[in-house]
Length: 340
Length: 296
Image (tube, rainbow over all chains, first blue to last red; front, top):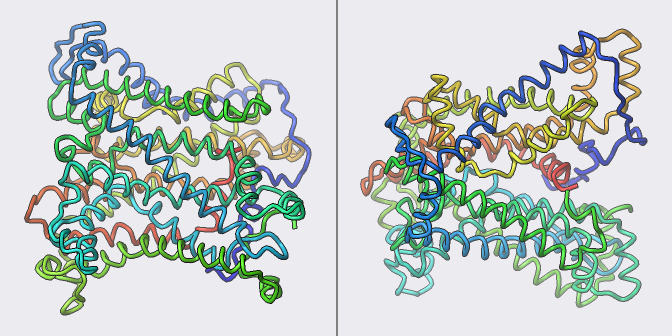
C-alpha cells in the first residue's frame, strides 16, 4: 500500500483546495414558505436532538449537583453547595483529582513530543541534498503508528492488561527471557509504584499514531520554499525542525494538547480496563471512575453530578491554561489567529 | 514542489542516493532504528494476541511465547457463541450503522443551513454546538440516564442510537460547516434559476458536491462510534442489547480468575479485525481528513 503514497491532502478535495477560488457570498434571501419549511426541518431536527440529549442534561446536571438526590427515590432536597464542600473533604476524590493532574501533566507531553519527533522525521529528515523529504519507508511507520487508534480503547486496555499479566503476560515473558528473573511474577498493575506509569504507557501507546498523522498533515502544509531557504542559509535538520517546523504548526500542537488533555482528564475507558477497582491503594483512580462508582454503585446521584461539574470546570480551566501558555510563549504577534 | 514531499518511494529518491553525506546516513540510521523499535512495540502485542487466540488457556498460562500445539478455531467458536460476541457484534453493526447514517444526514443538514443561510441566532447555535464538543460526557451521564428513561428508551437500541447521534453531531456539524462554506454560490444560484427548490438543490446538488468531506467525516464517526464505551455502559445495561466494547469488558471481568483466556483473545481479534480492515482500506483518506476543519 505504500507503493504510491499520494498526497492525500489535496486528493481529498478539502476546503482549502477550493477549486472555484473566490469565497462564496452569503446573502439574505427572500423567505418563501418552501424555504421556511426547509430551514425549519433542516435546522429543527438536528437542533432538537442536540437540545434534548445534550443541552437539557447539562442544565439538569447543574441543578442535581445542588441536591442530595439518590437517583432512585423521589426525595430530593436542595442542599446548596454542600456537595461541593463535601468534595473538598473527600480524600478519595482528592486522590483521584491528583491522579488526573499527574496524567494530564505526563501523557500529553510525552505523546506529543514523540508524535512530533516521528512526524518531523518522516517528513523532513531525508537526505540533505535534493528535495526536502522524509525518511525512506515513512509511509509504513505512519500506517503502523496509527494502528492502535483503530482499536477500541477498552480493547486496548484489555489487551495490555494481558500483556502486563504477572504470570502469563508478554512483558514479563520478554523480561525473564532477557535474563531478568526478578520480573518473573512482577504485577505491573498491582504494585503502587508501577501501576500508574504502566497505565500511562498504554495511553501514550494508544495515542501517538493519531497525533503523528495529524502533525504530518500539518507539516505537509508548510511551503517547501521555506525549507529550501533555510537549507541554503546553512540550517541543519535539527535547527530546521526547531526554528521552522515547530513554529509553523504551533496552532496544531496547541489544539492537540487540549484534545489530549481532555482525554486524560477523562481517562475512564483505559482505567476501567486496566484497573477496574482504581488500582492498588487507589493509585490509578480517576475522577471519572469515582463519579461512576458514586452514581451507579452507591446511588448518590446528586453528589456524583457535582463531581461531573468539577470535572467540567477542571477541563475548561485546563483549556484556558494551555491557551494562556501558548499565547505567552510567542503567540502575541499573531493576535486573533491564536484562538479559533 | 509546493509542499514537503512525502513520496519517499518516488523515483527522484534513487537519483540522490549517490550524493548522500555521512551525516545523512547517521540521521537515517538513528531514525530508522528508533522507528523500527517503535513499530515493533506497536505490532508485537497484536501478534501475541493473534497467536494466543489459537491456544488453549492452559497453553497461554504456561508460556507466553510457545506456538499453539494445534491451530484450532475452538476459541473463536466459543467467543462467538458462548461469550455472546456474535450477538454483540450484530448489535454493534445495527447501532453504529444506523447512528452513522442518521448523524451524517442530520449533521449535513444542520451544517448546510448554518453555513449558507443568514438568520437570527445562527452564530449562537453554531457556538453552542462547538461548546458541546468540549463538555465531558461524564457531567451529563446521570441526567441522560433519566432523560432516556423518561422517553422509555433506556436499555433499548433506538435509545442508544439517538444518544450516539446527539453526541457525534457537534463534531460532524463542525467539520461539514467548513465544507459547505466553500461550495460556490453560483451553483446554488444556477439551481434556483433552473427552478429547483431548496430541498432538491440540497439533495441533488449540494450534498453530492460535499461527498469527499462526508466520506472523511463518516470514517471518523465510524471509528468513534465503534469504539464508544461510556454511553452503552451507562445507558444500555440489558445484556442482550450489549455492544461489542461493553461485551468485551464484561466478558473479561465477569469470570474473575476463571477467565477463558483463549476465548478472550479470540474476542479481541474479532473486535479489532473489522476496524483494522476498514482502516487499511481508508487510511489515506483518514490522513487527509485529519488536516481538515478541526485544525484550521
